[in-house]
Image (tube, rainbow, N blue to C red; front, side, top):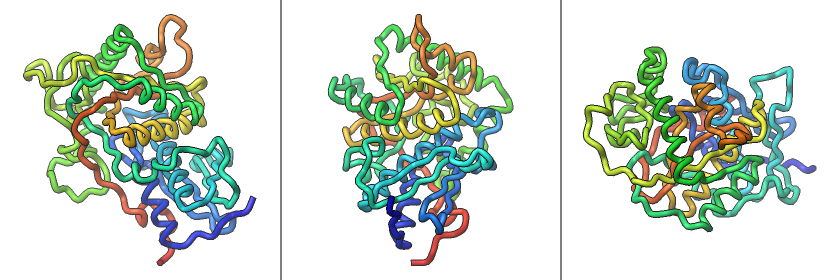
Length: 333
């Protein structure tokens, strides 16, 4: 399988696409390195950017890195190459989560995706604002489910009764997070208090959405300071569309694939003109996460709840520069 040469400009653009991926609290817990001998991108964990309390097992870190791997695949394909991906390629090196090698071979079915996803990388933002409540067309639901399936995951759209159950579980998780002092302090460390903060990670307040929420739609309180029961309700959609992303197993490779599936879904949603935000509170509590799988069979492992709909575009969040994220430094153009 023939590797391809990487010029400095293409290399920098590929890394910029990778760091545009979503991550929990916008921590961007990844680091990249170019394996010059094999002409491949090494994607490593950045444990110093992990969430000790909200993600003690590292599952969210793996999802975040998986999302960056998918963006890297899309960018490599954009330049006319075929990406060959190996997840957890070296058991003796657990910090190396993936290797992506651009080749001149024809794209394989496992790496194929629609051609318009590259432009969506730069337009995708989480939107934590109220949506209109307009139903998602069946064709859109089918395309989103196909995107997840292409990465080895399943995306389902629960009926109204089960959606209400999932939101109740999310609300319980949100309440637990609010009462947990360590998690609250950890969350606040990633929120920018000054609107024009020049930090290269974390969440500016403009990206957090309204400072209140209805009980039926438990949006994440990243500041861990609000008391929603004392605040007026906002006009969030009365029938929110929630999608459940699951994998058959729950190993580290499944977490990485779930991250690839999540980003594939989010980019397709962006192309379709949909907005999305993530309800991941219940994923941070083992017992609540287990209860998210559909009853009564409780099959598969829940990896993410995705809120989808039509509405305002979310605010952008800062990104580390490609030069900062690239562990050994990008070559000069």
